[in-house]
Structures are given as structure tokens and as C-alpha cells.
Length: 371
Image (tube, rainbow, N blue to C red; front, side, top):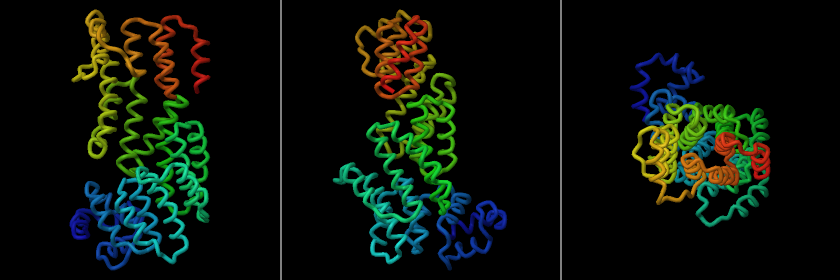
């Protein structure tokens, strides 16, 4: 690892690299010579600058070397956000008998985060939160991480208003955090949650886009970047085909490497997007193909294609309602979107219903009741 980095840094001025990653040239020299354990955050920034494509491989090698409690804490967060659960578990076991009180606290917190990320390993959400609330944590970062875990639980249970409100509260607390890497990472974690909720819960497209963009720029982990691109794809679904396709495509590329389930969900969204804008696509869904035909002025073919199909999702109901000019079907789509707490797509259906001169006040009441 160090030999590779030495070869790469020779292409630059070491002083300029040091300035860019906010450290000193002697610190870089000590790290490259392996004579002293330097800050893991500084090492990460150096690796990301010189060898971004090899970051994960090099970080895994480096994490096996660390001994300083401050570096172990950063390593645990890095492993968590980069889905390196095996290495995370390795760290938890390696340092479980530490005499350092602060590190012991962090190990307790990250053990719960590890269990949350590995929820299939026999611990219920209720047990997890009971353990989290029982922890006696003295550090500001540790307390924020526990509350962040609570945000994840609320989100998972679809208690979206509670998740959004707590995420907002946490955002103000992060300003006082002392460990810069954790501060940056936790802010990006919060932004990831808020991006989705801003779009789907409160239908604030600009806030969703700002939060998602912040997550991508933070570079805390590919799963976070993938989800942020997914949200940006959703946010521009109706307004900008090319940008929406671009972001869905980036999400799909990332998800394809580690989550077939998320990759398939993203592929379906690209299919929906193509149908909405009447773009050619290798359609697998007959209703999406019908919507494509409808948008290309082939209404009779679109209607014929629907003869042997029945919509099951809110998006399919919306497409069928548009193609058949069926106000009742559009109302079903609106109701389903609202029940799913998807106010972004619900608002679009509401716009379509207005074209049918539907009762606007009734639609608002329906959305408010479920919201």
C-alpha cells in the first residue's frame, strides 16, 4: 500500500498535497514510511486524493494496523458507513478488553450499530433500542450516534414524522461535535434520511435535492451515494428526464455491485421514468409499455395492451388512470400514494385529477388525513 502511494505522490508536490488534505508534509512522510501511526482521517484523505479507486482495499489494510483509540473510533464509523461489517466486527472483538474508557463507550455504541446493520442475527428492534437507551455514554458523539440509531428505527417502522423531527434536532447537535470525521459522517447520515423524507413526506423537492447532494459530496460510503442518487432521480422524475435518468443510472451502477434487490427497484424506476416521458426502453412491464405508447399518441394500442392487465401499484394505477381517462382509477392511485406516505407522487396525481375538475378541497383533505 505505502509503496503504491509513494509512487503516486511523486507526481505531485508533497507540500501541495499536504495543504489540500489539511496536514503537513512531515506527517505524510511519517505515514508513508510507516514509522508512526498517524490520524486515520488524514490517512483516508491522502488515500482518497492519490488512489481513490483503491481506497477501500487500502483502508482495509490500514485498519488492521491501527492501535490508537482515536483511530479505532474513526475506523468503526468508516466500516459502518461503507458496509464493511466483517471488519467492523473484527474491531469490536479486537478491542473489547480495552482499558480506555472513552473507546469502551464507543465500542458499546458501535456494537449496537453493528447489530442494527446485521438485524437478522437474532435481536429484535425493541431489544436493540432498550439496550441503546440503557447505555451510559458521556461523549457528545456517542449520544448523537445513539439518537441516530433511534432515527433509523423510526424510519424502518415508517414513523416518518418522528424520524424527520428527530433528524432535525440532531442536526443542530452535530455543530458541537469534536471529532471532525464523525461530525462530517453523522451530518451525511442525517442528510441521507432527510433527503428521502423531505421528498416523500413533506414534498420539499429543493430540500431533498440539497440533502442528497450533500450526501454525495461527503463520500462517506457507496450505499449512501447510491441512495442519494436514487432520491435525486425521484425528485426530477417529472421535471427533467435526462437528469433523472442520469441519477437513477448512477444509483443502479452502484447497487448492482452489492444489492440485487435495490438494483431491481432502481431498474423499475428507470422503466417508470421512460414511460412517463414516452422514451424508448426495453419494457418488461405491460402497463409501462402502454404508458409509453399513450405518450407517443398511440392511444388505441395502449388501451388494447391494458385489456389483460390489472394495476397493483400506485404508479401503475396512475398510468392506467391517465391512459383510460379514468378519474376513479386516479383517485385509487392518489389514495395509495398517500397511504404509502409518498406525497411527492401523490401531488402529481392530484395535478392530473385537477384536469378532471375533481374537488380540490376533498383531495387536500384526503392528503392531510393520511399525512
